[in-house]
View (cartoon, rainbow, N blue to C red):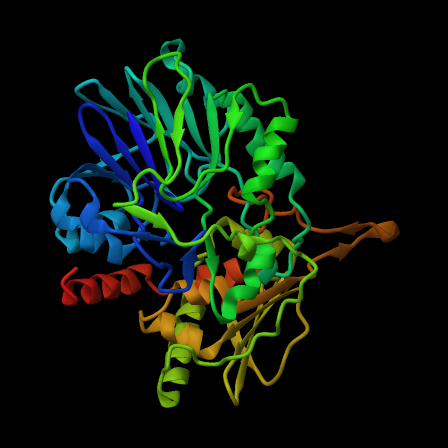
Length: 464
């Protein structure tokens, strides 16, 4: 079995029976907001015919519509989560052989078994475990893996030979949301524990191989707290029983039989992928770096007269959803805390302010003349909100086009100060509250499919 690393979450697995490609991202992504880090060039024409394309989940750095459009003629079968949005995108792109699979699902093709490992996060998401007589590869992708599931990795007393590991908590929402961006030691410890439990012969930090470019590049200093190099050295310090290695695009790992050590060949597929640089500098973690104030530069080029009607439409929908109990159990928790949420939509020369009082008998979203005093605050650019309303933007807004903060607490008898339990990244507990932007976005949230279907139309118009 041969595994070729293509950058970020994309790998090519070639077995005696089939060729598997995962989460294909062939160029820049997130609507052009993100660049692979390190930079690399993939020659899609050099890819072999893909027997099975595997998608891990719907996030746009894994479900990259332009790449999927280019690859469609060369792919036989797609295995993906049973996610209606993913299935709709694939159908619209013309994929015919699409099979939804879930965690614990196994597919046997000759002597190759593809098994799907679960995740604790809220979106349908799964890792991939490939087993052949030559070895076993676990592509963990972004999944948060519960140690109770570890026996799945060692079925038949087989050891994992290659572990492409989730190694870096991403703190982008914490930075934008006014939350703690100090090093997430507890969460990082959980990720290390998973790698130690998997006991692979070779572990490689993987699937966080991008940086934001241009104006939003300030996010890089806050969002990526663990470097690839640090992860490798930390595994060694933790007593990892295998070998940890820093590998990159173009490197190849060969598995030659049960009990054999993986063999690494550097830059071994230049006809397929070439590393353009080895610089991971954009991912240096500097939590003390400043977070710039939010200003609307209208990067989407929207006509000024079109912006505010779209903003008003989005706020009207948020108000309607609030009356329909759209937030579910989170609204009840906000009511118990008598929380107030202030929303500011900032344009080039105008601001709109609104307030929700969740402690009221019938909470509603009401425009107010100026910035209100509130427990929770959200600010979003007018052009970003309008572009999402119109289906022409998504990633840029969610990665950079908002700010939020929380000062929710209550004082009781004897001066006791109480605050809601803190949110745990990637998971939601019954006592936790979403951060302020998640509350607003949960009410407003234009259909993500409008954006993705727009991408599909543009990709098809360009001939894939």
